[in-house]
Length: 449
Image (cartoon, rainbow, N blue to C red; front, side, top):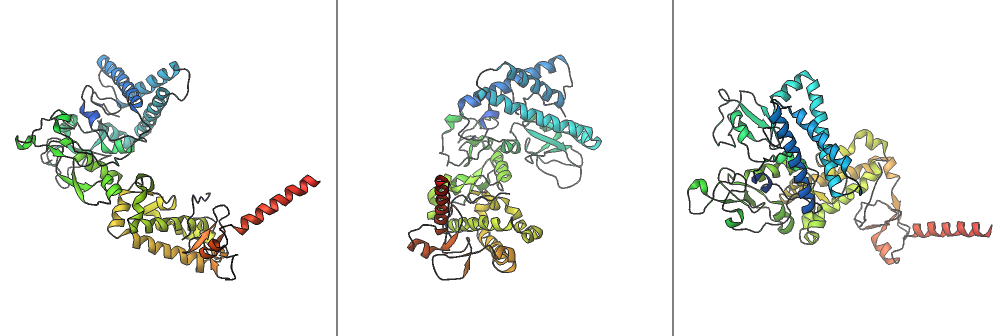
């Protein structure tokens, strides 16, 4: 298939003394378990963000000291008012780090407040909201008394649903006894993954010693030692390189994005509970740009090179479909509804895409869809078929299309030629040359008149 660059087609409860960012006041583990943020957020950004969170937390704590029963709505209103007050005092550069952080916090709190007020206006949703508990970024809701008995991830005991109230986080799925919710120390993986600045770790973590963590669990700060009791056994998380206690690390095994991107290694490695929840949540999100993370990988992995060519073909075919009323009526692009990013770009992959590619499921699936698309454009649809090309550089009258193999496509006008003909004719597009000549002639006539 022709190599083309950048083809584009037009077309309410209390918060249990925690702050709005989900951080436990004066508890260091909440920050130590946060994920890697994009390189655009430097240390100054983080310090300002933490300062804003502390200020909001102090205001909420002060309000709770004056009166009991401060609702989540009231907390959010206090946060919004504080951000607005701070913004009024800031002068000078409108793109300063402090202003941008305050604006981000203001928008985040205002959106949550609006959503909460909307829920409270609905009687059914109001009952659900009042029964919900928010802590450490989790949004816990009560579960029914029927069904299988799950495992509490806080006290590590069975939840007997018939006799014990139990809650489940709507974002990450963490399960806990109702009485154990207030003791949750793990920040919500779902909330973490929904942050606009979130970026998964794409560098293989070096193993570090326990002394770096002061011989304590990275999540709950339980004491760790290699020769101690089973409860003190340190367990390494291959995703972030930290050690955890058996309560926070259940020896779950999962695919590690960094090892896949850099080594094409699809082995499963042991990860902590927080990492397992995070990777499950993001596994279908197209957040890995292989060409940027490891440009040379496609030279060594034939499957990756082949799927990249197929995705470029899909983008070229999309240009036909958005101009075809028959294709729109048939909703032909819906064949890729489970991988919507395939019709948006050819660079981004999800963790599930890479796993399916390695295990041999992705290529046959996409090749089948490509065959359907090719049949529509080249045989079934007269509208699309009429938009084919005839090579101007030879006498062959066969209709060709940009997504065919062994063709060359002009990056400016998208005219299509046989690749051999194009290379033989000094790689100049005759269509563009005619347009340039016509434009120059028009300018010459204007000058003469």
